[in-house]
Amino acid sequence: MTAKRVVVFDYGFGNVRSAERALARAGADVEITRDYDRAMNADGLLVPGVGAFAACMDGLKAARGDWIVDRRLSGGRPVMGICVGMQILFARGVEHGVEAEGLDEWPGTVGPLQADVVPHMGWNTVEAPADSQLFAGLDADARFYFVHSYAVHEWNQESHNPLIAEPRVTWSTHGRPFVAAVENGALWATQFHPEKSGDAGAQLLTNWIETL
Image (cartoon, rainbow, N blue to C red; front, side, top):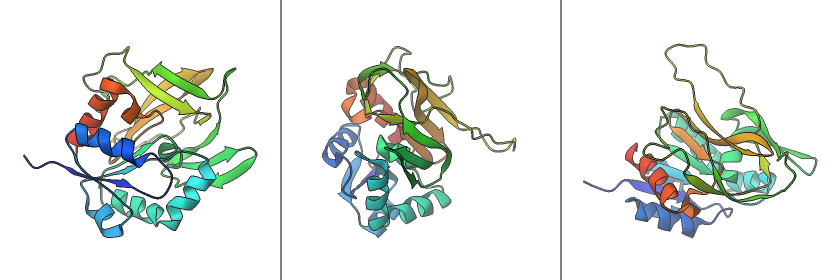
């Protein structure tokens, strides 16, 4: 069987080498690039992200990544976001009083974690839907590695069309519950870092690759 080809989109914000190694271990044929054609034609596109929401958005737009993500999803081509790469998929982010527009693939606002200890750094469990494909084969007590100070605390997207599947939303808790992962058709994302999450993260990336 030919390995699925995954592009890690290199727009200057994200540990692309870690993602590359983790995806390769999970069986993908991985390339790091910002080339438009290669990103568009890959079986899967991974969008990493670290740092500030607004800066990541500026970097993504400068590399035409916003257009690539939109075009891929319009054609049902898989995209996965990680950490800030997940956050920028929401409508907007607010950091230090500065509001920035996101890609608006999902409604919602990324805001400061509401917890006594910030950042949220370390291992934590998640609560995934029973029918999750992303977390298939993983025990309920599996732990994933988080490093973040911002998150989405409310999920407001609902579909009233019985022919359209509701997004599968996974939650975790640090102070109060926040969105830890989303599976929504061709668009999947995690707030945690699967590439830093050991065997559990490797299984999760394998699950994604198997859907490509």
